Length: 280
Image (tube, rainbow, N blue to C red; front, top):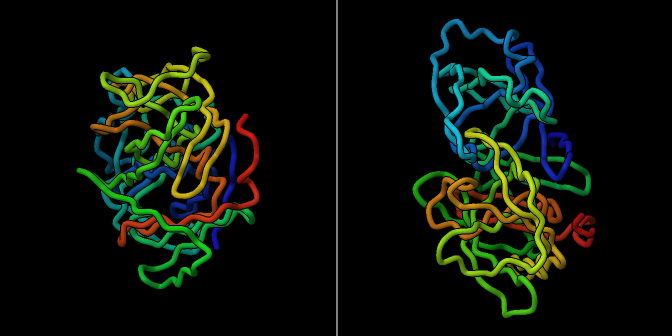
């Protein structure tokens, strides 16, 4: 089992590169290739970048892609699991210097293991594919992939008191929001009557502005989360995924213990002790 840290509804682990230990690495399902990105400049001089190449990395936001130095094949360790042939990217700007996390990791974990999260004891367990028996106390929902390695689910929302509206959404495990509803032509929902303009966050392509409001329900499988604090953002700024209605974030998912099974396109979930906590 690998210890987790949960801060601001985001899930963090510690990664070791050689003798260098880097805490507070953010788990991100949107980081869809084998590797690790370090964006805290305090670690930049501790890594050997003499053989690195310069790359540009796009992401959420309305600005230009970020510039990073990339080591094409490296090895690092998460818990007692060694991962080889990994890309290591080191962001060259100081944009994220004051962030509460130091970097991100994604597909290296989610793509190669049955990834189990227990938020009751704040641990992550990485099981080798097909090595885990999942009993009937877990609910299972399909996940699917489009033109990349980012997982999607179908879930529903109730904005006020209308019938549930089914939406196609992808999982952004790095997002602390419970849900981000994407504003675009032909969107399937109406905004709540009361919203507040806000700075939602910062992506690799700049700042993201939108609105905050409260929706009546978020329905995932047979589970209903009530009076959910939601973000609303322009699709062209917040999302780089075509045809997404919404983004499902860790603000809702951390209320479940979870098992991601990419190989069989399943997500197992079970309400945990945080399930009924109010959305602040």
